[in-house]
Structures are given as C-alpha cells and as structure tokens.
Length: 416
Image 1 (cartoon, rainbow, N blue to C red):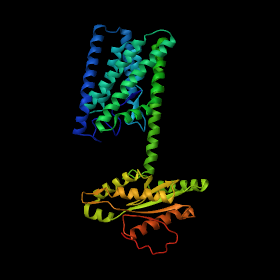
Image 2: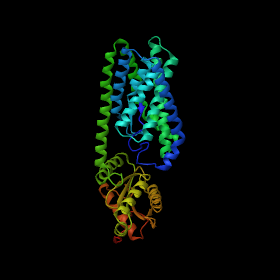
Image 3: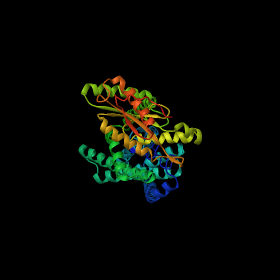
Image 4: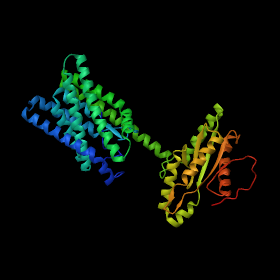
C-alpha cells in the first residue's frame, strides 16, 4: 500500500495551495530525502551492475515491474485520506525484495514511479520527491526482509510482515511530512489521519505480498492471477467514489459547498421525525446576509460570491449548514433547545462580523430562530416560524438574532 504523494486537492507542488512560501517550508525535508533517494538508487544500480541477474530472474523482475506499473496507474481512492488515494503496486515492490533482493526492489519502485510521474507530467519537485520516497520505501522493505531471513512458512509470514511494515512506515511518514510542510499543517495529526485511513489498504498489501511469495514458489506464472483482484479492488473503489461524488454534487450548493435547498428540506423532515419519535428538541436558525444586493451592485458579483463562500465557511462550524436561497442560509440544530441554539446563533453572527467585504466593511447577518416543540407545536410550522423570526430580526435593526415568539402579532416590515 503506497500512499501516493500526489493526491487530488493536496498535491505536492500543485496549484491548489502553497507557492514560494510552501516551497521554502519544504526544502529542509526535500533536499535530504531526494539526496538519500538518489544515493540509494545509485547504490542499487551499482549492485545490480556488479552482479546482474540471470535470464530467468530478469524475466521475473520485469514481470513484477510491469505488474507494479499497471497497479500504480490505477490507484485506489480513499475519500478522507489527505493525499486522496493509495496504490497497491507495492505488493510487487515488496515481492521483488523478497524474491530477488533489495537492489532490484529499489530499481523497480523507482522506475515505476518515475514512469508514472513523467507520463502524467508532474512538476519536477513532485517527481524528484515521489521517486525518492518510493526508492527509500523499497530499500527499507528489502533491509527488513534481509534482517529476518528466509526459512519455514511461519518464518516467511514474519518476513513478509516485517518487509511490508517497513515499506509502509517509511512511505507514510515521508508523504505526511511533505504534505505537512507544504500546507503548513501539524505533522502529528496529519500522520495519524493518514495512518488511520490506510490501515485496511495496508492489510490488503501485506496479504497480497504473502500470496505473491507463496504463488511464486509454486509457479511464477500463477502470480499473474494477483493482478486481476488488485485491479478489481482499485477499480471498484474508483466507481464507488465517483458514485458518492455524484450524490454529493446533487445535494451540495456549488458555490459554498454547503447542503443545497433540496437537501435541507430532506434533512429537516428527517430530524423532525426523530424529534417526534424521541421527544427531543430541534432548533432551526435561518440567516440572511444583510445588504447583499448592495454588495453585488456596488462591488460586483465576484466580491459577492466570495462573501457568500466566507459566510458558508463560518457556518460549517456552527452546525449542519445549508444554503437555501441566494443570500439565505440555514442551520439545523438537532437535540438543541432554544436557549442553547440562541447562544450558537449569536456566536455565528458575531463571527460573521469579522469577515471583511473587499477590505471596506464587515459582513452583517440577521438571524431568526425557532425550536420544536417548545415554541412551535406543529412540525409543519417550524420553517414558517423561523422565517418570521428572521424578518423580525431585520425589522429590529439587522445583524442580530431574533427568537420566535408565538404571541408576537406585530406586522413583519421587511428590511432589505
């Protein structure tokens, strides 16, 4: 299981984040890793040159290299992994170390990563680092396998586990380190997240390597049967990820990344069902960006869109958030009564005031709040009551939170 250092959205050397400052942060790690990787590859090349493999061994190494290349071209997406995907190609790299030796494994891993990065036109900084990581990981696997030595079947299991673990530790640590430096994120939490989300692929890799060693001992041709299952796992995971992405797209507002109006009403009904069934409170908060039309008219829609995105980012920390209209948002607060919801809404409104609009002024947001069943007895009335409270908030002076009162009969004079 190789954690790919070129994962989507967090790409090392990509355009999504970083820049000169990120490159400067990366240098203390980049230079020693690339230098170590180059030294390991050079030593492996000299070792193989001094003692070249025979025709049969060379055929086997090339076959494993090609299998690794095929597996590397079809990585397995892991949605919550910081790098985005993992590769099962290291089954064949670790297998090469077990069957033919450490230098051969280093050259195979280096050649596969180099070929893929060149084919995908990766930036040089990524190409150098990625190739070094793969070479060092394969070298660690070979060293661990050599330290354990060969022997009986239990000994083989221990050898495979040691080699796979060594490869995994070096790979995960170096990838997490590079991403932490590049994105200026804390290393330990990133390493922990990467380790957590790659535990299952690591198990697949270790078991696949053991199967490779056993099958190769019976007949090298039987190892070709491993390629199909490994590719099937990767392709199945890719199809599942695409289906999840499509579902998420249908439920998400494209501008803010929050849930859209359809998703909001679906979730509202689900939480109302739960509140009725268990007798728990459900609070709803509707928020409206004050003066949004004026922002669009005077500063332009790009500034307005940026403001909406920043509002959405603040709302993510307040509860389950949705964009239900042009400049209207909703916070769904299950199991939260009116008093606690009021404190949450006030905190959100206060945070909004820290958002600057084109460097000229702070954002202002009005909010309305209602709770079921304490303030609203009928579930069908919760949204209407919250909407009334929102407009009462605007009427009373903007940039504030108004809690719905059933006995408030004042006319709703809407303030734009």
